[in-house]
Image (tube, rainbow, N blue to C red):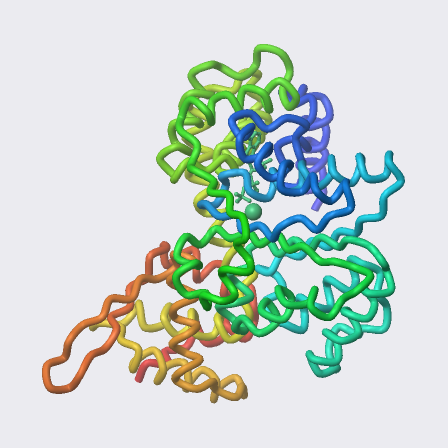
Length: 408
Ligand code: ADP
Ligand code: MG
């Protein structure tokens, strides 16, 4: 015990005495919105131009913004809306904003409840009312606000994939029933196929204007990193080579600025932990490994329960021999439900969940013809099994399943 305590003391002492290479680590976290967004001047001016009519009392067109993850969509939207809010308050104009990230609120009800919360419309419990009733409450509330309301639906594909487009459709029509107020919608998605599966009526009203975000190339990512480095680290501790490597790695990863910034933050943490006073390409390589792992773990932890149960079934099957098919997943999934006392979902829902897991890159499913037996999907795990086991076994119930041999 004593030696353990002194070991802990030593860690604390070391940490307190050691100098960090960071001056402000916060600017490398996901919540930070930078003051400047290099290489997004065009997208910023386009959005500003569309929203500017608000300042003259007009209703800005709805805007649809799309592009891959980490291309700056959320940052640009927040940046321009902040400027708009500042300007509106200077000229004494009333505009309200509601920002919803649909990845974390995938049902029509929860999205509407969040919009109510953002606008300050009380009396909407987090569950319980019929969705139509919530919609009416929201519309009446907006009408009484007597102003322009801008609703930002970020990662909108999650809502539509999960719950259909009814609410989105209603929202795009809401102005027909408003006299004193107006609503403009900014829809954002990382899913480039979203346009294809969105109903064409909804798509056309949502995308009165659209802005495409192209992936950043390695030079652009370098500039973004360079700027962030100056805020985050002490002068001269980050090597040019490290910056170039982080930019190149993130450029390969579909030009993802979030990835680039994550690499830099994690590399800095690794350097600090090792007591190194320079951040080099080697730290970036180590960070690359860790970031992959972290992302997968976070995604799995955040999955809803049914998704986790399906993934648990796949993990169990992955250990057995033979191909994993929708049928075998269903069987093992149902067995797990029985053991844990959950009510199993239908085959249709199961297929939706498999599609979700594929979207997230956790599995791939390829259709295979079985001759006269029709077709089936062959499912492959795309993430290391040990990561799945690590995360899933954090839950005692899942851990029990994983430690049993339930396949026979
Ligand atoms: P998206 O919404 O397209 O997935 P984000 O807007 O969340 O991407 O951007 C990912 C990260 O990269 C955020 O931390 C954001 O601040 C940063 N970022 C993106 N584009 C730029 C840019 N042009 N300049 C500086 N930082 C940027
Ligand atoms: Mg985003």
